[in-house]
Length: 217
Image 1: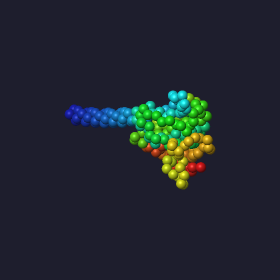
Image 2: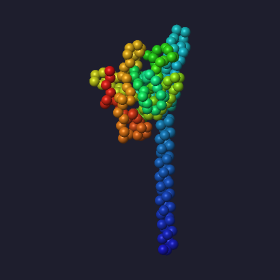
Image 3: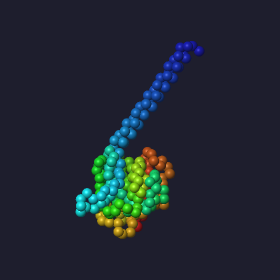
Image 4: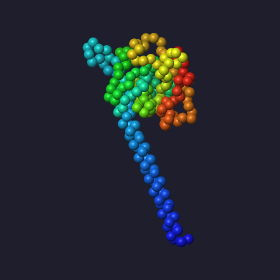
C-alpha cells in the first residue's frame, strides 16, 4: 500500500479523534455551566428555633432560606419520626401546610407549631426553585438534613373531591385537633420507569405523585 494512502487515513483518524474530543469538551462545558447556574439559584431551607427577642414575645420555629435562590411552593409537614434520609423509609407524614415563598436570606415564622422547643414530631419541608426542581429539608432530634429532589410525600395543592389536603398557613391557628392528610409509603405509587433522583423525576417529584391515589380524610 502506498505511504500516501496510509498517511491520508492517519490524518482522517486524527481529525475524527480531535472532533470527538472537541464535542466532549463542549458537552462538559455546557454541563458545568448548567450546574453552576442551578447552584446560583438553589434554595436551601433550614428549620430554626429562636427564643423570644421581646420580653412579652413568644419563642417559635422559623423556616430560614440560607440558599442562593427563592424557595417556592413550600409545604411544611410533620412526622412522628424521621430517618433523616432520602425517600420515605417508613415515615408517615401529616399536617401539611402551604406557606408563602421565601426569598434568599428571608425567613418565615411557623407560628402554628407553637412555642415549644421540645416538639415531639420531626419536621419536613418540600419546595421548588425557579426551574420547578424539587428540594427537601428534614429535621429531627436537633439534626437538619438537606436533599436534592422530593423525599417527602407530594400532596395535591388543589382540591381533591371537594376537600383540600393541604391547608394554608394563615388558616392554621394550632395543632390541637386530630392530624390531617396523613401520607405514608403505601399512598405513594412509584413510577418505576423514572430514575429515583435525576432528570425528569425531579420535576415530577422524584417519588410518584399521590394526586391520583390520595384521598384526604
